[in-house]
Image 1: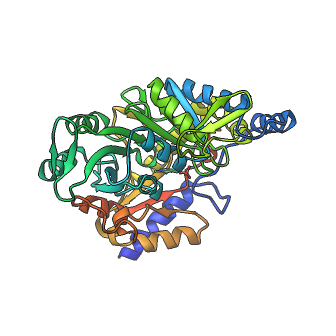
Image 2: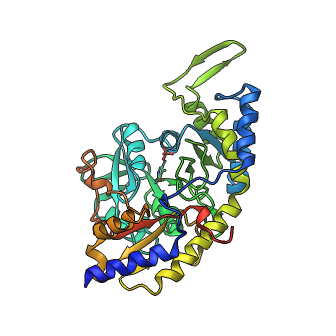
Image 3: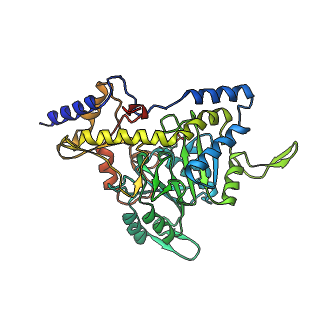
Length: 390
Ligand SMILES: *Cc1c(COP(=O)(O)O)cnc(C)c1O
């Protein structure tokens, strides 16, 4: 019985997708213009962490996101680390993050010497559950005029990092209200959601700081890369300073006034991304058409539903997510195996942070929904090139 359901699901995927195999989970969309820009960068001799290409890349990021400042970094993890430091996170404090996220979100907190405090997910957005989080804080946190303390650990709760899962915006109004009620710095891990908006505003520009990633599997790639977004002039200066080895000086005399990081994006990487950012609206439209195609295909398949974002957001549809339920809810491994045997590189969600050895004893709230989601998600190939209309 179950076996038939798996077969039906796999048959639907096989007919929904082009015959070319293997089909990767997400491939970059690179053009002749991107190639020309990289060649021009090489010929200019300015390939490292200075020069016009990084400035132009940051201008394009500001244009597509509406952020007042964008600081390009070597990768998204470094951008998260710099954002947390700029938000004032220090050793021994706690930072609320989703348990259902990529490990970089948790690691960046640990790099600060701080402790990730793991938050439940909700089915409606696959992001943080604001209501459950608020209830949890009412039970364990105490706010005074200057700070909020976790009474169970005695540590200060400093920041809330919201992540927009698979490109779908989280419930930002409710999460911002929680951050304000508890005096937490609001940071967005928008690594997956370049091109996604929440009530008309670009993800990554809704809190004090936002973070993007330009890793090879993201909607726009610079090989490796990231960026910090902020509207605050002083925070932007701090991020730039922290990411350029905290260098100060004039002429040929340089000193360093704190422990900084070599986190700035090299020009050669920036050059690859400029054209893609200019094409971002087309890439997003192509990915939204791929998502609509999948939604139509799976509407008729029992035991699965394609995750669809709320109507008040616009998602870049970075990854298309099948949620297995009913008799298929216990068949994720069989589904993954059968799809990969057909050359369809379907992948599970991440193992939740509280299941990883370095974070298993991190403070957390009940995370039953995150566990259930993690066990029932199958992500499907979602490259813009799968759009038949292109
Ligand atoms: C990709 C990603 C990052 C950053 O990854 P890098 O590979 O360092 O650019 C951070 N958080 C999430 C949720 C991601 O998907």
